[in-house]
Image 1 (cartoon, rainbow, N blue to C red):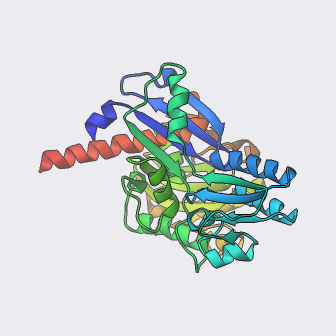
Image 2 (image 1 turned 90 degrees about the horizontal axis):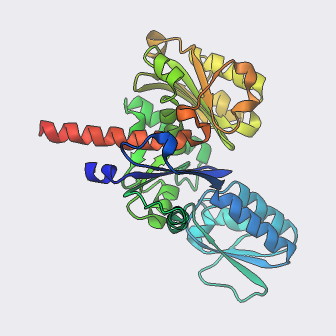
Image 3 (image 1 turned 135 degrees about the vertical axis):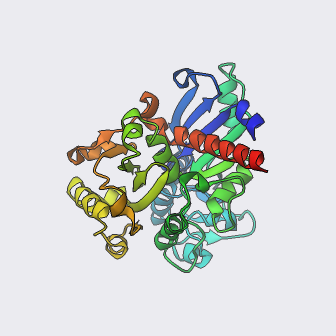
Length: 358
């Protein structure tokens, strides 16, 4: 693992709006590392779907399960226009884990290419490592030896709310006393189907949850790093989801997750205040169409978590929080990439310590 780390890390943070890319090597100043902020795969796919709709073409989805968001909205618009959409089973699970629910939306799940014309075939995948390799090569930059990718995976939950199922993963992490880098996987578990799809698109990649990588990255901001040992609230206001955590040292003592579009400044401020105090319930957040909220019983004894930082592309929507605008290494958009690399470093260090003890 150490040898791979020495050969550099390609960190790719996949969001609903953008995919943020950093090529990093040990010993190179972060400011000099190649960086890219480009549209996410789901937003680019949405553009192609919208073009097919304008051209009156039916759709056929192949490939793997990927993030929905923009492409899901585009398919709904396409179907509303009276056009057809077909999908192979793995691609269809982008829209819902229960294929019967997919078909209820009007998307036809098939086992082979349909014979209808005119037909636009679209391959689904969250990441294309070859395209990134080619982009780096244009500037004579070699590909790092290790690929690390972060995506948000709700988990396979065909018969229960994916919001509840996703938050159960956060709850299990906290209750087990694990740390954020435990959400970095060499081989994602079976229920994390989106992560496993990324692994099939990028063999050998390490894969992490976007919320966890954003928190780890934010802690690298000097202001946050100075206060983390006393306890800090770290907020990531993403394009689709807002995640807040209560962090002290390397411990996470509370997690809150909601949909950014359902939050305004007043609501988020109220939620965060009650979240810190342990007065915001999981049921209240879930009933508000968010994911959930959990604070460990010992949290109030550890800190009041009053210092607050915020990162993410929607952080500008919430100036009234009075939160520090976290921007590790001066680049807020790469917070998740910095967190990915930090997770890889921590895992490498832990493995070295385990080897030394044995």
